[in-house]
Image 1 (spheres, one colour):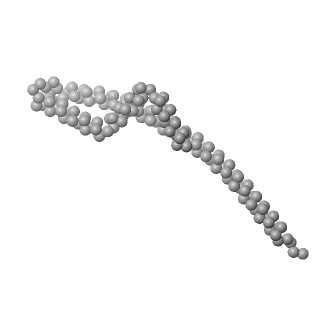
Image 2 (cartoon, rainbow, N blue to C red; image 1 turned 90 degrees about the vertical axis):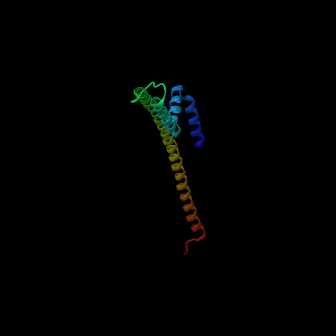
Length: 139
């Protein structure tokens, strides 16, 4: 069972386009504490350089930084939507696989139950036959 699931994942990973792989990498990167920390340090460095630096390219209220942040937010939203859409497709495929596995297991269980019923019926018949042969009717 897990062997098939692992094969499915490997096959799926090979079928990803470059864009889908990039979206996954970026999503994983942007969703990390390392990214958050680096981003905070970058913004603090930007602000410090533009407040106390010799050459200020974006003086307070940091309009250029706000422009970059807006563009970054737009790109992040698109990247996260691409990754989420792909993840939904993976979840749907896994759900379909689970349903097929459950349906096959149900059929096998029903077959085993039918065999079990038949065996119980034969055991009862053998018990009745044993009683008839060991305990003949008294005249």
